[in-house]
Length: 371
Image (cartoon, rainbow, N blue to C red; front, side, top):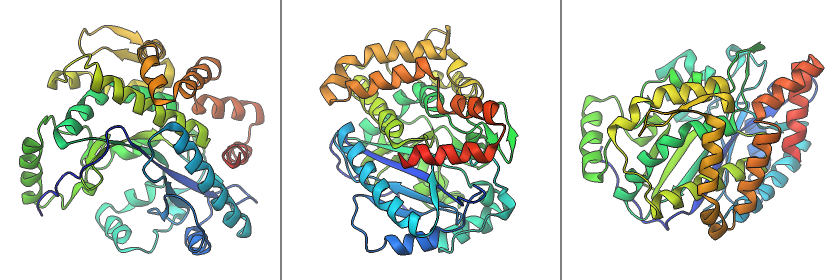
């Protein structure tokens, strides 16, 4: 199957996808109610899309094409309102968070759709273990070569996105010691991790043709990379974030990626190199394991820097770009929360330490998401 042409897209437009948990409000375990919820939503008017995910206790919401942070907040707020109305009728709650703290993957059911059945047959038990919840952000690119260049530039900042969004310290009732344990499940899939180092669409097409000839992949959906091109949309898709606990935080992280993309596009502070990836896996692990308290190794110099300090330094560099995009207050709020409270994973851990109840953690998570 040939690689489809890269669609035309307005530079720096935004699209946000959030995978969400369906919660039983009686015991706060996951609730396999996706099909019933989607049926109620069929005739509801809302922006973007609300779709099933691989197991029946998950759904995915997505905005339409947005130009600004404000538009993202507006669309996510409207979707949340419609979703809450239908969920209330089913006695179901909605929650963010990268993992459900105590669900058992073996009890999950695959959603009845051809692609999900195919993935279940291909990946076996890993499919049910994929009951994890992430945020994806699309950035519009004016052309395919620009998209690949931006992809490799943004790869330096993957630890930022992981640490800021991390919200999955618990898995099946266990404190994993990770801020983002969700990504450990993603690592198990073939073709996860980083994209190949190609800076032209022609070179990328050569790689794609080789992969399809092996029969390992059939299309771009088979790549689970941290950032991947999305040619049918004319975007790149950043995929490493846990779903934050609030739509406001999700919108702030999208605004950060948009401002960062503008800075990288206009100021071109560095040229991406294959050697940038020498420290990629280390930096990624540090962000997953320690969150904002991790260590960041600067790819160009090899300098070791506290990750929180590298994020603060980057936010200073983005101030003018955020102002031009109308998201300066969003990035300021993101910074203030990082310095005052840390990330969502730290909030979850602190709440559990106080309440000694994962059910109470889930209840409070759901209350946060409901606004």
